[in-house]
Image (cartoon, rainbow over the protein chains, first blue to last red):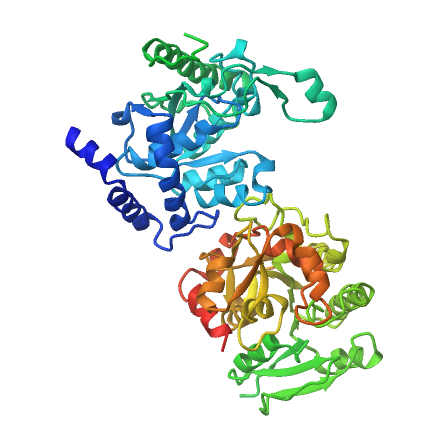
Length: 278
Length: 319
C-alpha cells in the first residue's frame, strides 16, 4: 500500500497515464458535450498535482465511502478564490479508484471569462444550471456543488468554518435524479488567506460580488484536508416538488453533517503558523 | 396505376441542400417535383419528374403555381442566410424575404390545401450565450437576437412559423426543423466556409462545442419528414459533439489564434477582403449552442438516422 502510494508520488507521469487511460474508456472521444477535454484536463492536473501534493499537502480521508456510482457531491465552500473546488476535483480524479471527473457546478459569470472559463470546462466544470445538473446525473456523472455559493467563499476571518445557509436546489436535483448525496468537508482552505475582512457595504455600493480586504493577497501554503463522509440516501418518500419546509429538514441535515465533519477535521488538523481557527 | 402523383414543391431549389433533397425525391416515381427559386437555377438534376421555375415569391405567378399544381407537400428551404450577402445592407432585405416570403408561403399553402409544409429554420435561433445549458430543447426561449439585432430575421421567421403552425394545426400539417450546422461539399453556408478555409481567425481563449450534420443526412431527414413527422418543432442534430479546435484539427486547416477581445475587430478589418464572417455570428464560434435531439429520435428512431459520424462529415466537407 505504502509502496504504491510512494510510486504514485515518485512516478506521477505513469500514474497520470493510468488514470487517464481509465477515463478515456468512459469518454472515448476525449471530449463531451459540456466541453470536457481529457487531453487538456490531464495537462491541467499535471500542473496542479505538485501544488496539490507539495504546496497544500492535501490529505484525503474516507475514500472507502465512494462507490462506483454517480453522486451529488456537496461540500463546504471556503478560501476566497474557490481553490477548494479544484482540489476536490483533483482528489476525485487522482486518489479515488475508479477515477472520475467531478463535474463542478460553476457560477454564470465564470463560463463567460476568457481562458479561465474554457480551462474550467475542459477540466470538467459546467454551468450551474438545473438542466445541466440533471442531464449529467442521468448520464451517470457525479456532480460537485457548493450550496453556500459565493456567500461561502466571501467570508471574513471571524466567520471562518461557519457554514452559510445551504440553498435547496441540490436536494431537489438529487431527488429528481435519485442519486445519493456525498458530503465532503474541506479543512484548511480558509487559511490560504488567513486574515480577511469582507467590506460588504462598500462592495454592494460598488456593485461588486465581494470586496476582500487583507494584508496579503498571495495564497499561503495552508495544509488542506479533504474528508469524504458516508453517502446520505435521498429520502424516497419525498418528491422533487415537495414543499420547501419538507425539503429543508433534509437540507439542514446535510448542512449539519458537513459542519460536524469540519469541526472534527479542525481538531485533527496539522499545525500551520497562520491557523486562525481551531 | 392511375393513382394521382404526390405533387411536391421545393422552394429555394438553387441551394445545395434543396438539390440533394430533389435528388433523393426523384427516385420515388410517385413524386412530381417542382423547384422554384428567385436566384438563377442550375438544373443539375435532370429528370422527367422535376421541373424548375425561376420566380420571386411575392409575385402573382407564384400564386398561380400553387393554384395550378395543387401541391401536396411544400418544402420551404429558401431562408436567406448570412453568408453571401453584404451584412450591412441586407437586414431589411433578409427581413423582407424571410418574413414576408415565409408568411406568403404559409398562407398559400393553407389556401390551396397543401397537406404538409416543412420549414427549415436553424439552431441559430437559440443564440450562442455563455450561460446556455447543454442540450437546449425545442421549448427553450429564442435568445439569438438579444445581443445582435441583426439576427432578428432568423428569430422572427422561426416565431411566425411556429405560431402559425399551432394556430392552423387542424388544417395543415406543418413541421419546423431547427438543424445544427449543416455542412458538406455542396453547401456554402457561413459555417462550412469558416471551417474549410485556411488561416481564418479562431478564438484562442474559448473552445465551444459544436454539432455537425452532413448535408446528405439532413436531406434524408427532410425526405422522411413528409410521412414520419407530425406537426411540431424539431431540433435536428446528432448525439456527437466536437469542439471547434478539434474540428479544425480533423479538417487539417491551419488557423490563426486571436484573443476573443480582438476577434470582432479582426472580423471587421478583414470583412471586405479575406474573411467574410458577419460580426453578429462571432458568438457562435465563442460559446456553445448544443441542441437536444430527443424529440426527433422519438419519431424517426435511432438507427440509420445519421449515416455519417462527425469526423466523416468534417472530412467530407473539405473535398
